[in-house]
Image 1: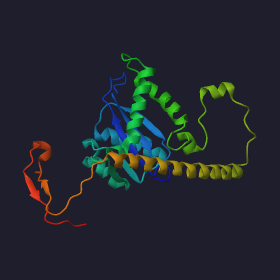
Image 2: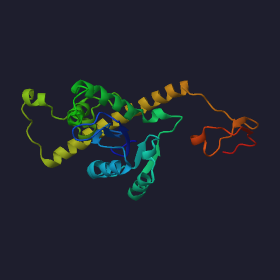
Image 3: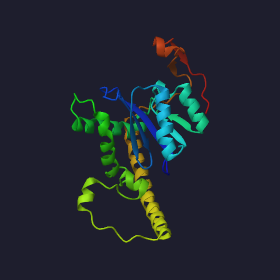
Length: 250
């Protein structure tokens, strides 16, 4: 998680009120390192829809990630999704049931989307999907608590130009030679990313400490009785009794 677009997370927010363009879900995709988000209005949660958006809108623009992180939703673990990752050489990983907060970054972003949309549109307005680009502009320009920089600074090493900047901005600096500009940009990017990595590591350690303080350990040993679960447990929800652990192996 130390480079841009090395590991991304995605989730579906919805269903929402259907918009005038027949969208009632949002496909959320976010880069773990830069915190750069995309939010795509979609009409359903079907795998072909999600796969097409990922390829045509994210991968075509930012390249193929090394890892793709999702929750435990069945639509994210389908044969189509697995095949897509196989073709592109992506390592598909999921949030585990015992550690769901590993995807908390996207969950927090989803809450921010809902809170912001509730301020931008009323409950009876079908144009919420038209407001998403303005929300994204604001989010990408705001300093992220984890990295200490805005997503635009992490990605471009500059702030996005906002409407207020056009009214109150200072005159532009004298242009640099291309070679000088590239070298200055490289140095600034290295400085920003180095500091951001330190902050991300500290935030991850704090999250792990909070989780470990609340987690219940499962220390099994030989002779310990556990519940034997049938293969169709998810359908029947009926355990088949207890068995004893005979031996443990690493």
